[in-house]
Image (cartoon, rainbow, N blue to C red; front, side, top):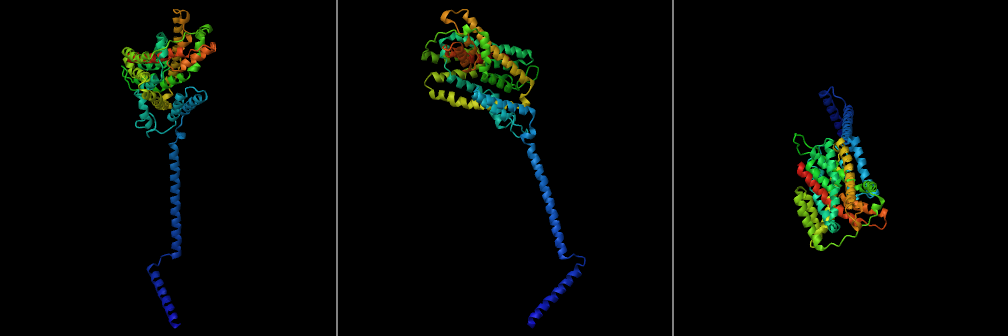
Length: 446
């Protein structure tokens, strides 16, 4: 026991000695409890400052994120174009107006008008963006010839071969192109721009894109040193819009320019066409139209090539691909990129409104031109050779929509009078005629 008290006493003495030495070395030092308290206070202050900095950083991050969203960059122009895109989709689904065209275009309009901050390779006009690469097929006129290849592979020219004089109706309907060209010149558009606008009258979207990519592309330089305007977007949208609205625009004009008795005229059935004639037609057609209008060869060459694939019966696989898979893929790409090119800051201009007005006028003139010329032809025809003038309205190249409208109006006048096959002749000749007209314009304006 004595040993235990001795050890405890020694430890107590050593502790006192240590404390005395600490007090002598640090006379002004604070107690350990106070130091501990201060350390806790400093740590709490540091944590609060760190939390404040984190809070401010989070707010800045949120603000920065919001500045890049579409909500922060939206304008009335964007909202207006988004409504247009939704309108295209609605009428395509609800009223079945050219859904294969208007749904891709409407979706493209929405994609092109989601507001964004430039410089991140998002927009269709920004170099290096995905949309810009896809748009290359529009700007360089790649998509239209591929569309024509598919059209050729799915078109039967038998009605035109059996009655070649109906080709005149397709030619007469192209008057709308040239009259609108003159009208655009009078409104102050440069000749290349006016030529691209005029082609809307043919109601042929691919041809309108092809010629505008060559004439009104924002690249060509005019003789006075100014650069032509980029009108591809407005022209393409106008052309496809009027193609979709064929069942709305044409019937009133058809009823206005024809009498009820004329609408009841029965045409004699077309003669049977041999296989040899069907094979020779695309070859002869390519040679004739190619020599008349070489500038339209990318369109006409592919049109007749596609038809030769179909009629030769030796290339069925190629014909099937051209009229199904290929044309579907190109239609998707064309619709999306044409729609996306309608960015509000580029599309919403006074020129766009003028183009839509001129396009509507051009289309109406083209329809009237075919109807009036059909009535003129009847002055020289007798008996069963007379034409039902309604088929003249199919001279525009909206295949086969114009021919269907003719059929519908003919059945209204006489429920047993079927005009579809007769109307297909001027309809397909309108496709050829609009391409030839485009080549003629290019030869003068390039």
